[in-house]
Image (cartoon, rainbow, N blue to C red; front, side, top):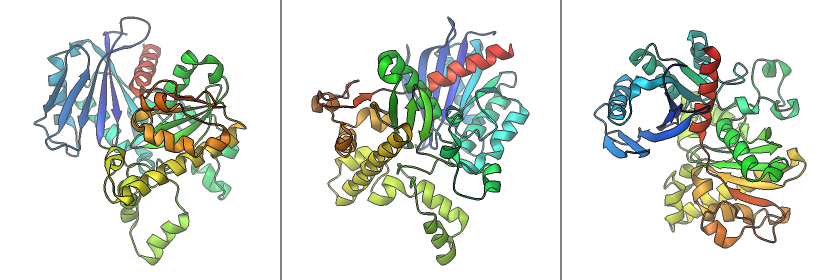
Amino acid sequence: MSGRMLLTFNAGSSTVKIGLFELASDSPRRIGKGMIDFRREPLRFELSEGPDRFDVALEAKAGDELDAVLSEAFRRLSWHFDLGLVAGVGHRIVHGGDRFAGPVLLDDDAVAAIEALMPLAPLHQPQGLRLIRAIRRLRPGLPQTASFDTAFHRGHADVVRRFAIPRALHDDGIKRYGFHGLSYKFIAAELARREPGLAEGKVVVAHLGSGASLCALEAGVSRDTSMGFSALDGIPMATRCGAIDPGVLLHLIGTQGKSAADVEDLLYRRSGLLGVSGISADSRELLDSDAPEARQALDLFAFRIAGEVARLATTLGGLDAVVFTAGIGENQPRIRAAVAGRLGWLGLALDEAANAANAATITAASSRIGAFVIATDEEQVIADEAFAALAGAA
């Protein structure tokens, strides 16, 4: 593989996280971490890790294409890193459907297949495609790879993947896929490094961020997860509803006459913590608020998380540990405590001081179940998978 650097792009619904990795050994080593925040006007580009740091406004504006934004971002990065050494670019793609079981080198057919899955992840899939196409135009000779959130869950049993709908619909791809797989892959490996005995057992990981889900791991292998056909399912999120009675959707479309686009906007962008509180999608703001609606939103969040832990423990046939990760899971003790408070009957108890300090191990001495806080690193998984895919194609 020519070149000594990899770039990774982790596209969210409103931000893009950028990783810079050095290929000095057998595996990529992070040397920089940045983010472009599309929620800001003007756009902000932050480099928050590495030898140099900055937080600057971008002149470019985000439109249907991202060529101007990435061109300016690359120019900024080139002041700190030699981008002529970049050997390839790796992307996180949320939905891989049944087509993709692992990382791939992107060609026209792969890009078309990713685009065909766009209706199943309308917040994230378009952003990933915009990045892929912009880089193709800006650096046409630079190889790109895709890593898929759904791939980690491909081994689920049929009873886990199947909805109770006509078989023909299942065969057409309407089934439970699961998401946040790159995060869960990292956590499974990190838990095995830190707690090898527990990692061989039955573990539920709670990835709690603006998007949120849970995953049941057995010996590091995904057995079940809270998200299903789309990234709407499972627990409530920042602006997404989580699991909802399908009769509600029939009522909205039939009785209230809402269009499919209106319902999509409602479920993806106006529900969750934002919808229940009417205040904010940001759990930090809700934790700081004295409004009863803020408390109600957070209570519902913790209640649904605890219920999902119990459901996933049923899939596993037991529970040895719970791991909290992602922005909320790693940094908000009150939410972890609220979840654990509803799971005391399972034997889960947190050490108050350790939990308040966001310690790596937050298990109380009396707890029958281990409790841990592990920072996830999706960009490292993207880089590792990109390195493998590019080396395989060399």
